[in-house]
Image (cartoon, rainbow, N blue to C red; front, side, top):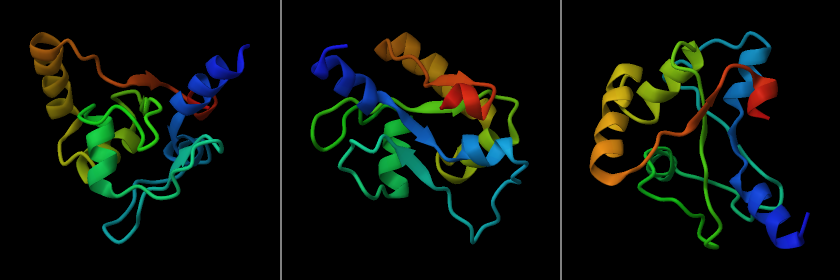
Length: 123
């Protein structure tokens, strides 16, 4: 793989630790708990605010500050981890997010983040 292509693939791997935690039986966070977000180690970003994370998952922001693509990955709609993330970070239920993505697809041609069923698939 060319260095440029490898870098693009590396930067697209924007993975929530939620995948790893779900694999070990993690439960939804309480109000005082936070989500940890994992990006590829080549990514220079070391911190992301909840507002920035929301913009990335809603695809209002599609690049990192260094102009590399930010491509979110999510759990399937039936996952309790996704439910907690949607409510706490996106301020919407999973159902409201489904409606949001129908609207975004029709009006802006955007597609929702890809979804996976397991931590292994997300990684």
